[in-house]
Length: 115
Image (cartoon, rainbow, N blue to C red; front, top):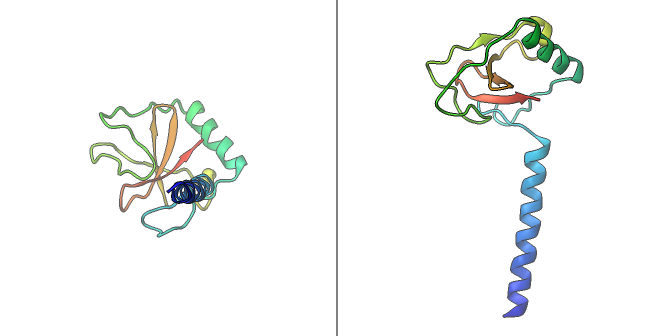
């Protein structure tokens, strides 16, 4: 019995570590079926500067806007400026709270939080 409990605990630890590693290293998009959104550090700086300089006001929603969830239909999606990087112009964005969220315009799913 003790051996069975030890083996179960070891299996649980191994599977938990694998799941945490996947969560930390990748952000997947529903529309792109596993593609990752890569944002270079210089573009992250440009994004935050844009939000500050243009005094973008955060949207207010009843639900929290998070990665992997759809943005409510009543929230307007903003066009991503070209100087945020060529790989991001296919997305839209929402500024919610103090976070810039990249959104797939076709599905309205949040694919990346810009930190």
